[in-house]
Image (cartoon, rainbow, N blue to C red; front, side, top):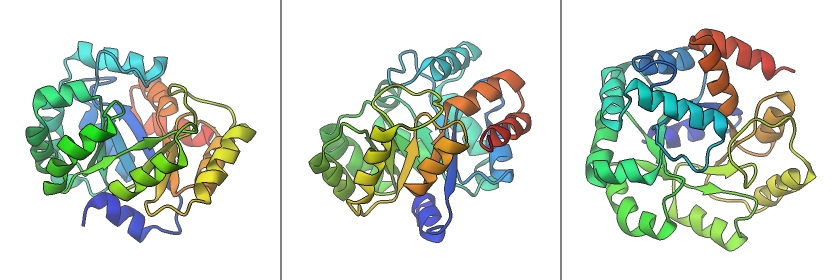
Length: 258
């Protein structure tokens, strides 16, 4: 069974926590250490960002991390090499998050094959058109048992959400707002209503809520309305400041209690 499916199947009553960081930041060779540290500290799933020069869905924190990673020399090929080295040491799901251009340049077939060889269970491609997903990416990804995770926002129609739910597997990434990534202090009434609306649809796929989670209020709101939460910008900031994954996690867990 794909590790993503296994995670949600075996933890139906547990509120999951997934963290995002950008490969190659703060250091080129630190990716493996961050992953192993996050697993050791109990993180449920890890999103590893593929740095890209034009990350249009990301806020300034993740944009800055991507720029640093590229300057450090991180490439998709380098990332796969690093992940392959620790494949047998990591048991939680790894999900690559990146934009379509580098993946297309690498080649869809080669990309999916490298995912398998390096222990990657899924991929999130924010700028992948759904038709291209169905016609080009999904047939290849299915052959390699790689989950392609789709995003929905408060502006996504019910028809579209049900279509995504029907044609994807793994989980659905619920973006808390239609804006770019970045920490928020709370989720307003409109976002809470969005969470309730999606809950009432009784979708087939589990959901994870991301974008803006940085304290206890936003974490609890996400975990009450989905299988779990995804934290990106807050952890990326702390990791960039401390240069140490354990220290960054200590500070993150403290912030999530406030």
